[in-house]
Each structure stands twice: as structure tokens, then as C-alpha cells.
Image (cartoon, rainbow, N blue to C red):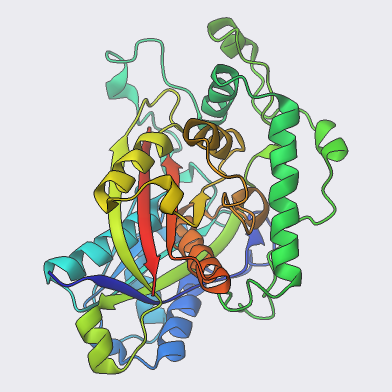
Amino acid sequence: MSSAVIIDVVRTASGKGKPGGALSGVHPAELLATVLRALLERNDIDPATIDDVITGCVSQSGEQALNIGRTALLAAGIPESVPATTVDRQCGSSQQAAHFAAQGVIAGAYDIAIACGVESMSRVPMFSNAQGTDPYAPLAARYPEGLVNQGIGAELIAARWKLTRTELDAYSVRSHQRAATTAAAGGFDGEIVPVGGHRVDETVRASTTAEALAGLKPSFADPSVRERFPEIDWSVTPGNSSPLTDGASAALVMSEEKAAALGLRPRARFRSFAIVGSDPLLMLTGVVPATEKVLARAGLTLADIDAYEVNEAFSPVPLIWQREFDADPDRLNPRGGAIALGHPLGASGTRLLATLVNHLEATGGRYGLQTMCEGGGMANATVVERL
């Protein structure tokens, strides 16, 4: 079998996902078209040779409806002969797109594919594709007490792993500090594609302090939920959660043989993949079994991994992951995570991949692992090897 390699991976800088945010004036298809054009220009690829464009997007309604991957590639000027599809694995949508692209290469179905993602949370608000409906109505018999939103899930895992508000806020401060330090040193410059004049992550707050975060009110406090889950301490706030974000990202994936034929130098190789389902009530814990599964498939242990990207949907997620694996905190989200860099849902998977590959190159690390919790109780995990 051929192996699948990453030739390049890029992203936009984050924009605040609300009216007036730095990217809120840009149609989401144009956001994605911008990174697609940049990816091809940076690598001098004939766009007609692309076998497929696989796009992650969560809120597939309004401006993000009707297969936004296809709309974006046409807006980017890519030939009409190139197909695209749009997938929804919730927060892991573009990580799943990367899995599908790489697996297609390994299977021999593709020579060249693009995995990408986009989310404009300012223009297509979260859950707008479910307004006026109850998507979970068929689950009432299986879960008679009802499922809860991700914020309550974060509260539940904080309570059950006995994470304090102080720990959650301290982790968030660390995320902003690491992201700000990396940005100041130019560490993100190689992965960011400017949109208009915007080239700096708008969501990073270098001045964030634990004292400031301690003054924020809980986001999800609800007396009816307290009756059902008396163990909750209401510790999850806007300060220790990922912000609403606009952004896009994309990775160029191909076989090693095709890269050699085109004279391109691969930056990393996909080593293993995993996807798991998990408790849809807690919802956010799948990163633990997904990590176990992907390491077993790679024939590696966590000690072999030089950097781990665990998506910071809420700070309890990387903290319970770190605790379960007794993981080195210095290797965990070493350039900051979604709490600082933002979480444009459909784009986050390939955003993490961009940051991970650049970090491995900058530090000489060999293996990187990324994993992401997902709505409905799922998680993706990926191991890559720097080349």
C-alpha cells in the first residue's frame, strides 16, 4: 500500500465569531476559497490533477449549505472537473476530512486530495441548522432523562474528575500565554494565509490573568440541571471555553510516489487513524479511548509522541486527557489551543494539523498526535510522523 503524506497545510488567522469580527464580512465559501488558492499557489500544483476536495463544516445551512466545499473550489478558480464533498463529524469534521483524504490515497482511490474545513460562526450561527426542530427526538426511549448540551457535558466531566475552577482558569491562562508567545516569535507565520489584511489570531488575549478569569460568571448554570446533577459546581465560563470563531484551513495530501513524481518534499506522513463513539451525555470524553486506539494502531506509546494537540473545546477536556495518560504538560498544546486560537468548528481539525506539523518542524520532533472531542459523543485521533 502507498503511504499518505502531507505536502502542506495552511489556515486563516482566527476571527471573532460575531458581527464586527475580523472575518465576519467574508462569505464562508470565500474564506475557504482563500486557503485553497494559497495551498495550490504555495506548491505549484496543477489544480486539474486533484482527485477530490473533502471539506468539514458543521452548520450546513444558509451560506454554508449545498456542499460548501464545491462552492468554495469553484470560487477559488479550480477547474469544474474537480469534485468536492462536505462532511459533518461535528467539531472533528476537517480532521475526519483529513482521514478520508489520506485513507483514499492509501487505498489507491486518490493520488492527490485536499482535506479542508470552514466555519463562519458570525454569519451562520451555531445550531442554526437545527432551529425549529428536535433532532434528538428519536432518542427519547433510549435516553429518557434527556441528553444535555456540550457545556453541561464539560461541567459534568469537571465534577467527576474533580477539577476545580482554579485549575480550569489556570489552564486557560496557559493557553493564551503559549499562543501569544508563539505569535510574537513568528511561530504561526508559516501556516497563516492572510484574508484581506487580517493575519493575526483575533481571539488570543496575551494579557489574560487568572484573577480576571475568576470574575467571570458560569455560562451554563441552570437550576433544573442542578436538580438532576447536584455534583456540578458551575465552573465552566467564557474564559475557560473556546470562543465562537470564524476561520478556514486546508491540507494538501498525496501519495509518496506522486510527491516524488512532482518533485515535492512531503512534510509529514499519516501514521495511524482512529475514530470512536463515547457516552453522548458526557459527550467530551472520547479523546481518551480514541488516543488509546490510535496509539495501539501506530505501535507507539505516549512516550514516543513529541507533541499532543488535544482540542480545547473546554479546558476540562485536555485536563482530563492529561490526567488519564499522566501526560507531559509541556508537550500538551505547546503553542496554545482553541481557548486562545479559537474553534471554528468545521475548520478546527486541519487547523490543529497545521499547528502540529509546524511545531514538529520547529522543534525537531518526530511524532505528533491530535485528538478532538465531538458532539453526540465521538472523537477522532490521528498520529503523524514528521519527514
